[in-house]
Structure formats: structure tokens, C-alpha cells
Length: 592
Image (cartoon, rainbow, N blue to C red; front, side, top):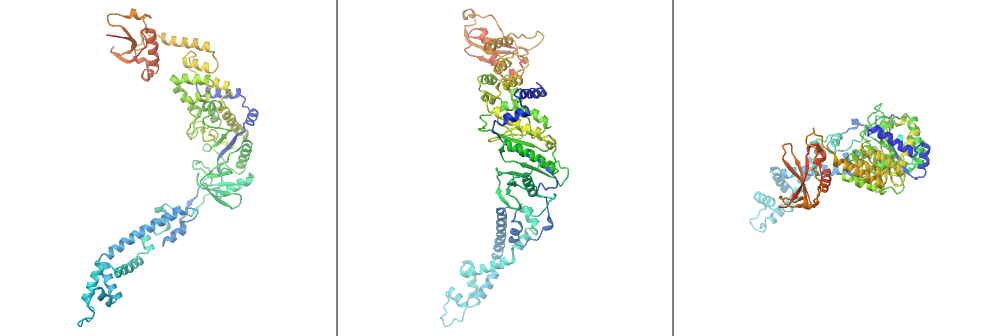
């Protein structure tokens, strides 16, 4: 079936359940749905990012406190700045300790210690430490040799004088290697060097637009009569909330669920002017009537303020109904009743990589399902009224982000609308949202619009041959056949398969040997007795037999063996890929 035919049939089904604008409003009013919207648009003269870095504010770095004062602001998290300062201090101490060690353990340190002893240690203390006999008649005070001996003794076995000298030596080296000297040695002369090397955000920027996002948000809040508004300077970054004026309070990384949020969207890269900003206006979950009112208000506000949309902008609609869950959702029913390919066409979004058709995904699954054993299970469950369980054989309901119908936790994100939506009529936008509500409600209730669903499903599922086995089951599941009619048509379909004869001019076609039914006794000869087992044999182009499979316990009738062989071949992937490559014979296995 061609895509345009599927779209037409889907629209026809929707007409059958009466999704006219008046009916949509009436049906939706009975559902108690919650809705939210994500309005993507370009806003004139507003910065949609932090602007470009303004390096005219770059200054020299003198110490670590300078760095903290410069970067510890709104541009950078305080913890991040602390981490950078700690890292610099560690590097500074490593350099300082290395320099102290090298100098102290070399000639410089030994010379310093000797001079320090001469200038700071009392000779009487040296005499005591050297255990000199100061009471002897010939003692005339310590000598130069005594001092040298003391210096060597203290250097080799450090005592309190060694420690005092070392501490003073360290202080002198610290004075020689200040934080400023260290930063210079590291190439951190200007604040821009620190920003580049330690990944700190530059705090001074030039805004391209005349206004920032906060100004736009406050105007939007006031014009639409809201009590609160939230903004983020980065897509899904940290949020701030205001109730008016410059009273902005931090809210953290979770989007507020009690007010609209406005934030830049980096995917919006088709501006008319460089000063325009691509922004996303995201509503909080609202009752359906309130969301419809806000839809009108937002469109009118955007038009009055010179905002514009194009093929790059989206208009995502989020819908939830009471007690919604993925377990209850019949995703196939939702895709079919909704007709998302039709909606994509209405907004010119068929080829948009961010909104792949969910109906296309369903059709892909169906094309794989045809001919598989799961197909019979699917139709049996549909006939028994287990439509949700049956639908999950085709599609589990788990989707990727960029699918036109995107299942979320507690709601469905419909991504089909968008494009140049500001130039669409408001009733068209309203009806699209209402269509989503009604279709989702139906997809979570197996009994709603069941007949229309099955008819539509049959038209997508049924193969071209009305008497094909899958086609027969499809008609049965849709209620077009009674049980007796199903049995008769299945017998005909099986008979047609078994009686299909190869063309005499075609090589390597299926040929299953079918001698007359016989009793076991007539099948005994000199080669042995029948065992009830059979071989499925394929003859190659050279005539060489190849045993494909052994059928065990089938019985001794050729017709039973043929039927068993047909069932096995229907599930063999190699045979199904190209039956024309096979010439099949079913041969009994005899005892020796």
C-alpha cells in the first residue's frame, strides 16, 4: 500500500469517528486531559546565548585572591572557583617545596646554616652541646674548630637549631617565590590565561541583542497575565524564577512545574538577523481548556512582537490523560487513529529528522511480522479482544526521542506539529491538539472505536492476496469473517500452497513428493520397515542430495510428512529467503 493511500485511509477512519472541530471539542471535553506545549520561535533583538566574550575587561593576575574575586560570580559556580584555587595552591606548594629542597640540600643551604649558627647560637650553648670541659684551667672558650664540629654534628643529626634555621631559610625562599612569581612562571599573567587553562567561564560578555532573555520573559509574563516565569541562560541549564521585576531567585537544574520557562535552543540556527534569538517557550502541565487559551495568547503575543518561525522550529504538544501508563497504551492504535503522517504533511514536517513518523515505524514492524509465527498470535489476541497485548507484538510503545509520537513517563510528546506554525490558522493548531487528546484517549481504551481500529489495521496488515493465510486471519480479526468461513478459507489457502506445481521450464523449484496415502504394511519392502521419521532433502544443481532436516515421529503417511515439511520450511530463514533455489523431496526413513 502506498504511503499516500495509508494517509488517506487514516483520515477516512478519523472521519468515521467524527473528528470534526465541533466533535473534537465535545469529545475532548469529556476526557479531563492535561496538556503542555513547547513553542519554538525566533524573537527579534534578543540574545539567545551569553554573547561573545568581552576581553577589554582582561587584567593582570597578582595572587590567588585576585582570581577568586574576578571569577567567583554568576558566570562560575563558587565550588568550581574553589577547586581551581586549591589546584593552583597545590601546584605552588609543589614548586616551592622543590625549590627549598634543592637549595637547602645543596651548597646554598649549607652556607646559610653555617652563617645562621654563627649569628644565632650562643657559644656557651655550643660548648654544652659539644660536652666541653669549660672548668678546665686551659679552657679559653670555643674555637673555630669547635664551631665547625658543632655545625657538622647538627647538620647530620638535626636538632632544634637545625629546625629553626630551616624554618627561617624556608621563609626567605617563600619571599623569593611569591604567588605572583609562581603565576608568572606558569604563564598565568592575565585573567584570560587562567580562564583558558582552567576552564573558567569568562565573566564579561557583549550581548548581540538589545534585550536579554529575562526581559523577554517578564514582558511575556505580564502580557499573558501570569504570576511567575522562569528562565535559563543555557538549554536545560540552571533556572531562575521571578514573580515580577528584578526579583530573580535560583531554582536549580530542575525545570519548574508551576510556570512557563523560557530558554535558548541551539538547534534554531536559521535567524533572519544575527541579533535575533532562537528561544523555546515551555508551558507547565495545564488543564486542556487553559492550554488552549494559552495557545491563543502565545500565538497572538508572538505575532504582535515580530516573532517568526520557519522549517527549523517545532511546536511540540504534550498530552496526558487520567491513569495513563505505557502498559495501557496501544501504540499501534494511537498511530493509526491519529494518522501522524497526515499531521506531518499538514505542517510540512515529513522529511524532518527530528520527527520520524511513528506510523512508518509501525509499518516497518508489520512488514517484518508478515509470515512470522507471531502473526497468528497477533490476530488471535486481537480477535479475543486483547488488542493492547496484540499491538505490543508489533510495537512495544518504547520510542526514540525523535519519533513523531514519543512516549514519556506519564505522558506522550507529539512532535508532528511545527515548521512555520506562526503562519498557520489558530483553529488548525487547536484542532491538532484536540486530535491528539482524543486519539490518545482511544488508544488507552480497548473498546473505544474498536471497529474502526480493526478495519484500519486490516487495510494496513492484509497482503494483496485475500486468501493468503495472513490475509485470512486479518479479515477474521477485523470481524469480516465468521469462524466457519475462517476454517474454509484456511483450508483453501493451505491447499493452494500444497498443490502449487513448478513450471516445467523453471529450474530448482519446490517439488515435494506426494505418492498415494498408504498403510504402513504396504510401505514395507526389502529396504526395511517404515520408522515414522522422514528426511527433508534438497537436490542441488548437480543432483547431489542434501538432508536439510529430520522429521521425527510424523507417522508413515506421505501426506502427513508433506504437511510437517511445509511447516518446517515456512520457518526456515534460508528457504524463506529464496524458495526458488530449492528442489525439495520428503523421503521416509526405514529401519535396517
